[in-house]
Length: 154
Image (cartoon, rainbow, N blue to C red):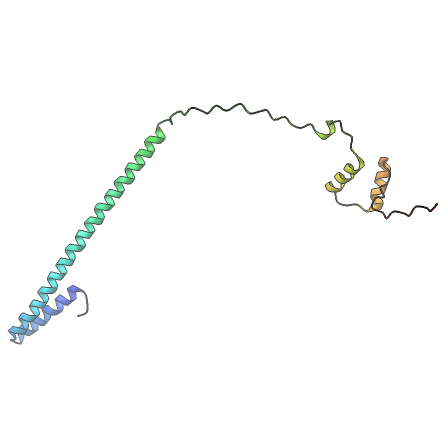
């Protein structure tokens, strides 16, 4: 048999009517018994479904009550001032002293330091321009990059 239980019940009831109209009392009784069987199965299934639904609703209410209880506890904890905890004895932090700026350090700047600082802060200049700038500042041109000239033989 195919169909829902209600469709099967309707089918057997219709077959029982047809059998009665044709004066076949045995077939009619057989079809009515089949219809009654499926009616009982349908009723039992409906009771089980109703019991399952009630159980799910009960569980849902219990979960909802538990959630509401948690929310109430959280609200009460938020409204109450936190219990004062004794602070651990920590020695006061040492004062951090700013380092002395380089200009006030009393150290003398070497030509190598000034050259590296200039190169790192600006792009590289052509060699002729660098030498001209050093001469203008009073520094001797640095020929450390140039190939060394052979010394005169004695």
